[in-house]
Length: 317
Image 1: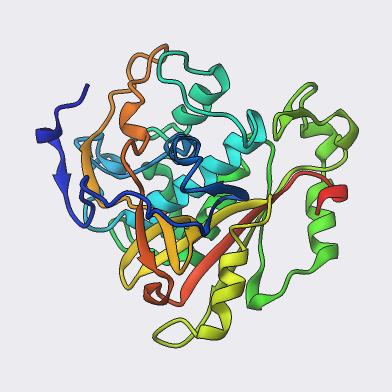
Image 2: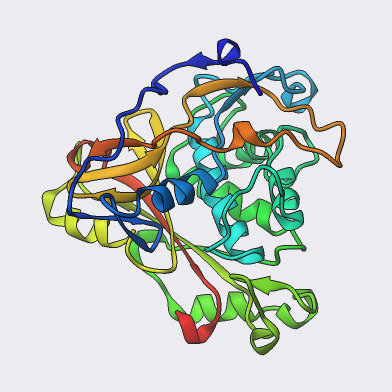
């Protein structure tokens, strides 16, 4: 087990308060829990989400660039977390739970796609270098829209997952655009027997599962109270992958809410990079948040966010 002394703590503290003893429901990515009677199940669900944080001592980005993303990579890590959730749902289903004693084969494939090395599909290296095309130099802070654009481009190379990714600009979702995107070349790219939310997609072979990212601004300098109820409702729908946003220049991955508090995973902890040299084994404990997740009052969230959902088939949109 990793020695706690090797970690650098920024905004995150491992003495995060436990969930309040409240009769109000706790919502996590479309699942409803009671904090009074289902706390173990709730925490198991949260722990099973992939948690990507700052890392140090990985191979230099671009050969001569940074070897750590501390201080600039928090939104990139949040993008990784929300996209990892899409892949978990895609390949092994929303109800999968992490068991460190019995790692799931597809789970390890997903985790490997995010390891800090240049040839992983969604590595910090790939995101940072692809961001140059979006006008961001390596080491520059990203906003929600930029990381969404980069992930959309990277997903095109992930034939195993075969996801369609659409970014709804100007607060508008154009259904016909989505239909064209999800049907394009799907019969050729969708592999036989591939799972979609844990189920065979044979009946939906003409439809690529869709990751829909909707960048929004819910106010000027702070969130408009008129949007709060709708924002919380986003965590109640079964298709929810969560929200990326945070405080100014400090990104978080929001996965649910209880009462007036948002529940989130915080990337602001610097851990040593995991050596991926042995592809048959990945030390994965540091990729799961094994303490109560952070919470913040909904009024504290920066109004610039991206809401993300997954749509598995036309019948389930």
